[in-house]
Image (cartoon, rainbow, N blue to C red):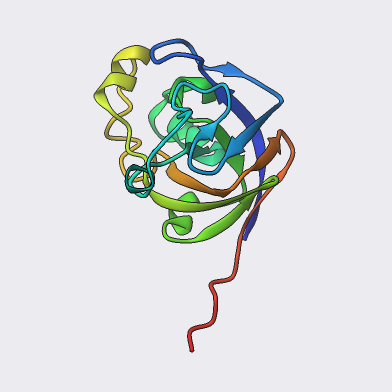
Length: 158
């Protein structure tokens, strides 16, 4: 399974509009440098419960438009990475490459009432169970628009 990064978005502070960037650096245990959720320091215990970035599928936004007549721009989702050609729900519990980073899918990133209120569009029900993916950065690196997204084979059990 492989896909492509179509967009990268960060916001310096919570509540600020997401802004597109051509590339971003992710640090394991900290998040995306320059994003509102970046953590300068973190204990190991707290680290194991956190996600570092969020992703959304371009195809989901297109389906939202086609099936419900709702136009939602990638930055309005409040997700960091827009991808095409990869089913994000399939990455839950899986390791995957995102540009130069090694990541692990943690859980579905459900739409929330706060996002719906900010965009002023009825997106909660149409995006249920396909609102994106929360992921943890296992190995830091850079990701750029146009980079690949690829699931890694699960290690063989002995």
